[in-house]
Image 1 (cartoon, rainbow, N blue to C red):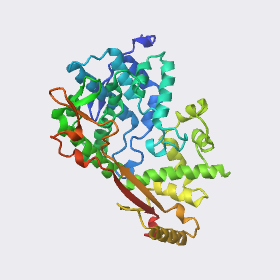
Image 2: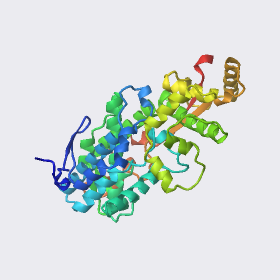
Image 3: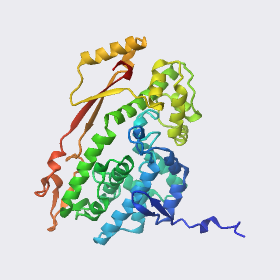
Image 4: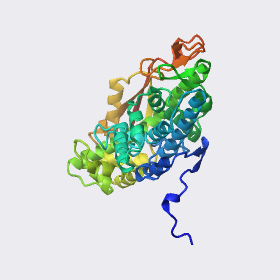
Length: 412
C-alpha cells in the first residue's frame, strides 16, 4: 500500500508545459515549494492584462503564467552567461530564479489598474518585497539572496538588471506572452536570440553583444507597438480607467454610509481609511483576487447610486462608453458640451462624473534610466543609441502622448 508515502520523497523537480516557451523546468525544490504556496497560487486568479479580454478575447492569461515564463527565461539567461565564462553559483541561480518568480507576487486584483486603490500608496513592488520577507521567514532564510537581488543590493549588479531593467526577462516574457494571447503579432520578439546575445562586462553589468543590436531595436519597437496597439488602445485605457473609477466611487459611497454588497475581504478595504499597512491588511490582501471585484461589480449593477450602477453595467455587459482619441488635449468647450448633453439625457446634475479625459504617455526607451549597453569585440562598452549600426533607436527615445475623451455612448 502507498498510504504512508513520506512527503519529503515527493518529486519536486517538475516539468511544466507552457504554450509560449514549451517545456519549463523547475530545477530546484525551493522553487516548487514557493510555487505551491497560497501566496503564489493566488496569481492563478489575477489576470495578467486586466480587462484586456474585453478588446482581445484571447487575453485570459494570468500572472501565474507570466511568473513561470519569466522564471524559465531567467534560467535560460543564466545558462547563456555561464557558457560565456561568467561564474554563477547554484545559490545565485536559485536566488535569481526565486526573485523573478516572485516579482509580481504583490499584484492585486486586475493587476496595475487597482494598484493604489485598495492599499493607499502601496506599489505592487513594495507589496511583493513585503510578501517575500514573509516567505523568507517560512522557508528559514532560503529567499535571502533573492531579496537582495530584487532590491538591487546584491554585489553583482547584473542579477538585478535581469530582474528589473529596460531589458529584463520580465519584459521578454510579457511581450511574447501578451502578443500570443491577444493575437497581436507586432509584439512577437525573438527572446532566444536576445538572451543568446546577453553578456556581462568587466564592471559586472549586463550588456548585449554588439552584433545583437538589431534584435534589441526590434524588442524596443515591438514594446512600443504593443503599448499603443494593446495596452494603451483607447478601449483598453477606458476599461482600466472604469475599474479605478468604480472602486473610487464604491469607497466614496461606503465612507458616506451606504452599505454596498461585497465579499468580506473587499468590504474590509472599502471601509479601510488611509494608514500604514498592518498584518491584517496583508492577510486580507492575499485573499483578494479578480473574482472578488467581478462579483462586486455584478451586484453593484443594481445599486441605487446611478453613477456606480452605470459604470458597472458598462463593464459587466460590455456596453462601454464612447471614446475619441487625439494627440492634443480636448477643448474645454467640447468637454463641457458633452457634460451638458449627459445631464440632459439622464436627468442628472453630476454628468461630469461620466465624462473624462484620459491621458496616456510613453517613452519607449529611456536613455538615462538604466540605458542598454552594447559590448564590442574589443571589450569597449557603448550605449545602444551611440552605435553606428543602430537604425531605429533614435526613433524610440522621444516621449509620445495621447488623449482619450470618454463619455456615455447614449449621447453620441
